[in-house]
Amino acid sequence: MYNDTVLDHFQNPRNTGEIPDADGVGEVGSAECGDIMIMYIKVDDDRLTDVKFRTFGCAAAIASSSIATEMIKGKTLDEALKLTRNDVAGALGGLPERKMHCSNLAPDALKAAIENFRAKSAEKT
Ligand code: FES
Image 1: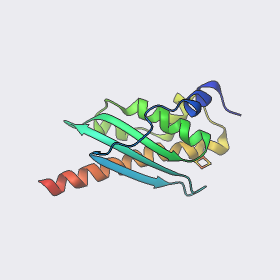
Image 2: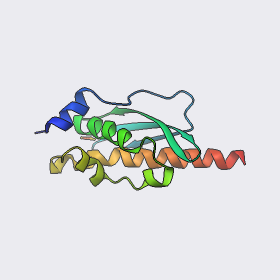
Image 3: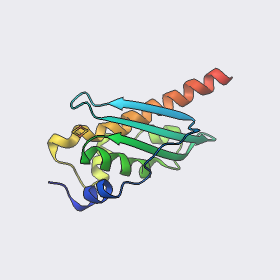
Image 4: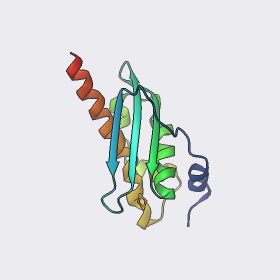
């Protein structure tokens, strides 16, 4: 059902774990299945210097999370916010139609993490 890229990112996910001193944390759940993703970001000069994730979900969700972190690391926050589920699924070489919702988790968690970072930054000023 899954192609080799999806299987590779599922079996050897990149950037897993937590960042204890993260600048922003975003947690989202999938309305379709209840799976959960938490994304941790470090930000320097408006750029994502580090990204890690924990995903409690299916193979497609874990593979999507893994490849998404590779795609956004080093990007500015505004560039990273342009990431869509189609970008994620496309980078994986496609997902089965009924698994497309799984690729929502990473863009949604990233958005939540950036909102958390921006809210914290606004509090400091
Ligand atoms: Fe829940 Fe894939 S089935 S994220």
